[in-house]
Length: 404
Image (cartoon, rainbow, N blue to C red; front, side, top):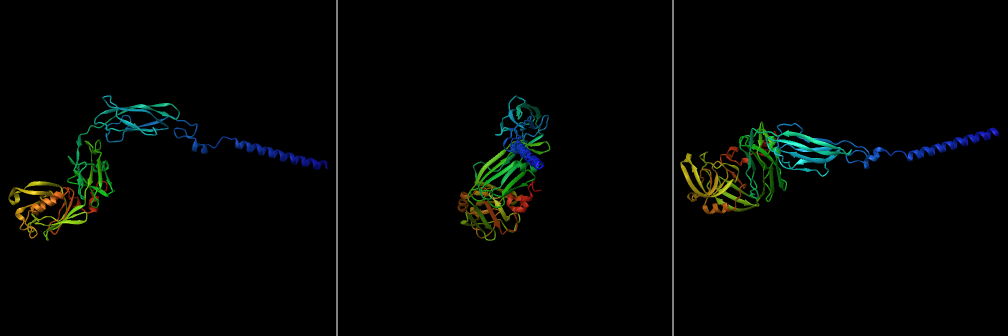
């Protein structure tokens, strides 16, 4: 019995020792250091590290210290990791500070005004790291001195109203080498959203934007060409930015058939006029009114017509609406009333009676399409500054530098 009691007491002692050790281990687990991966989700410091971790701020200036021939159109900014912006100044040679703005999270600073050509700029400032220490910002860079500056001009004006076929044309003073850089620098915003594309025309000096289909009436259009400081070729840079905000008016178009000697005006889907017309003489290729989609370019209460090839000069006509730059107009002419609606005798123009010409003139807008059919000659790209609609959509988009 003594041996048995001894064994039972030994087992109880072992069991009690095990329970004590288990309790001790459990207590140790409950009071141990928290898992740092879990704490990291809610205990990040100001620089994005875990609670208690610090680091020196890392500053990156763009352009970098010592950079030369910097294009003023390139991004100019300072960014910080493991810290925030303390102060930043960018100073030109005259000691004037370039205007800039700090981001909401104080991790970057960006210029808000353009830099000049051929100038040196100096960085100064600091950032504060998550370790609480300042890191200085210093350095300098030099902008490029262009060999040549190109200026671009838009064909559309602010607050103007145009027809549903109006192209946007940006024309330069000389040929552009880096066409893709130009297209990247231009934005076109339309309300409602309108699909469109750029295409290079006229010997690489002009780029046009047109919609895939005619604009919806009432469309608002904003075009912004940020050309200043952009490299457009070797040693060639943009001279200035250009922009325009305009709108599209009602949907009006002209449909004409040279063989029927008529011209219909259709506004917002309804025919509002059907005029007798005399088109260009069919038997002479030099006088034919060409088939295709013309676009109204301008209008003039009176216009002096001259064509030395056909022996006439300074013939003044009333209510002239230009529809191409190869001598095609819609205008009044009393002398051809006898042929209007019956016979084609003009030198390429659409002759109306002065009364009908005035009626059409009063309601026309630059950018209205004039669709002609029935003649032996086709309107081509060289016949018209606004020959954008002579191309199919596939042909048009292929002329973009970004698609080539």
